[in-house]
Amino acid sequence: MPQEQDEKTNYVYQFGSTKRAVLGGANAAFGMPILALGASYLGLGSLVRDMDLSIWFGVFSTFTIWALPGQLAMIELYGTGASILVITLTVSLVNARFLPMMVNVMPVIRSPGVATWKYYLSAHLLSINSWAYLVQRGPLMPRDERFPYYIGFALTIWFAGMICAALGFHLAGVVPRPVSLGLVFLNPIYFMLLIILGIKKPAIAFATCIGAVLGPLLHLVSPDWGLMATGVIAGSFGFFLGRFWERYQQKNGGAPHA
Amino acid sequence: MLDQAMTEYWPWLLALVAGIATLKWRVLGVYFSGQIETTSPVFDWVSCVAYALIAGLVTRMIILPIGTLQETPPEARLFGAAIALVIFFAARRSVLLGTFAGVGLFVAMAWQT
Image (cartoon, each protein chain N blue to C red):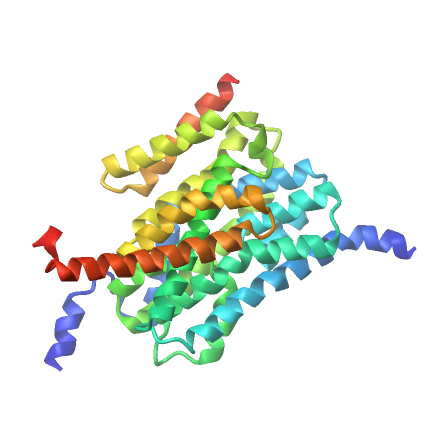
């Protein structure tokens, strides 16, 4: 028992009950996540209008896909008249990142009190935002509060995304062009800083840096497979560099920090 | 008549099919996470792949955008990204300040052209 008490005092985030953890997650979403994501989805909404699609198409695709880069790719390919097979394959490839992200984040949110089917049901809610928040804050809260926190956070930004997709449709043409472009640009900038914030291990830092360089280069080689190849190649390099780095440090008795 | 129905409904069908194609990865992720020990090197490797993928996606979106950002000057995007990084670190890792500084500069530069 004393050990558990000791642990309790160390939590940076503690809500006290499941319900309050859900609200805590929702509360965390109000702020930078909704601001950045909302702005990006305003951009999506204006793109939907650019393409002469219905306002409900922006809302519906946010409901079904819930991943901005994939949605943008789908709408642009639709505009070029690509076939449903090509579009689906592209969206699938762009969003394949969710597989490693999910594997990475699940150990953080998994809790003995939560039935497995709930993870499967809530899997659809995972996005870069909730992933980044969970990887960073999840370990700082009691295990049984992490899943409700995730649900509260993810549901809130999901609905905000749908609302903003609709708002953006009406906003297009009202705000000056550079501003609506700025809304679209906000997306990669925000993600870039979120990723940097989440880097904890040397291997991850290596992987991120190499990935940042390889991403555009391999996209030039193959727009379809470039992103996947970037993940596997840069991720593997980073992984092995991290191992060498740790071995080197051990050999030198943890020299730089000692 | 079938043709008309197809053109009317096919964007919706597309969003549904693309949604399922996306959901598949998330569900597979939950499944595989139950099969891999967090202490195993495989888990570390998958984490590295996740970070590398997103980092690659982000720089690709900034340097070689696919959509409407294509019409913006590359230097506006590059300087915007650079100032976002500088302010982020200068403001003790503030995502808020970094993002707004970067986007602010980008909008100002895009306005000039």
